[in-house]
Amino acid sequence: MKDATQNFTAKCRQAGLRVTPQRTAVYKALAATTAHPTAEAVFKKVRRSMPHISLDTVNRTLLTFRDVGLAITVEGSGGARRFDADMTAHQHFRCIKCNRIIDFHHKPFDEIKIPRSLSEKFKVLKKTVYLEGICRACQG
Image (tube, rainbow, N blue to C red):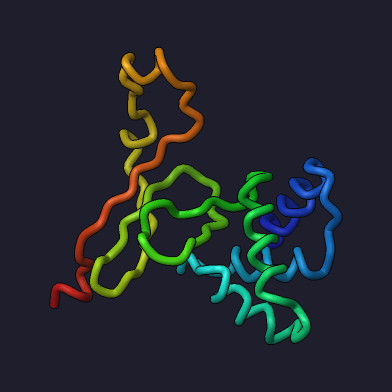
């Protein structure tokens, strides 16, 4: 967690953001889990130590983290926006029964080629792989 906190501080400063107690608490709550929480879940966790923080502050903070490269939003989950502080190369699998999102890494997915028909028309900024199915726990 120490490296994550140092990275957090450096990214904030690089983006011209102050390192406030609220931002620090939101980042620590997000970085401490692999559950890909919603803003509301992060809010509930942070509120235990900061009872006066608002859901709006948490949501705006998470969106700011996404904008400066401290978090990503997990696309395609179909429900409330979910966040992930893991910025390493990886993909996501969502169980359609329990709604759990699981990280996995398959290196060939990192190297997906953009079809020429798209690259001639658009500037692709991000490529993601998102899979859905039924996890082992829900199959049994």
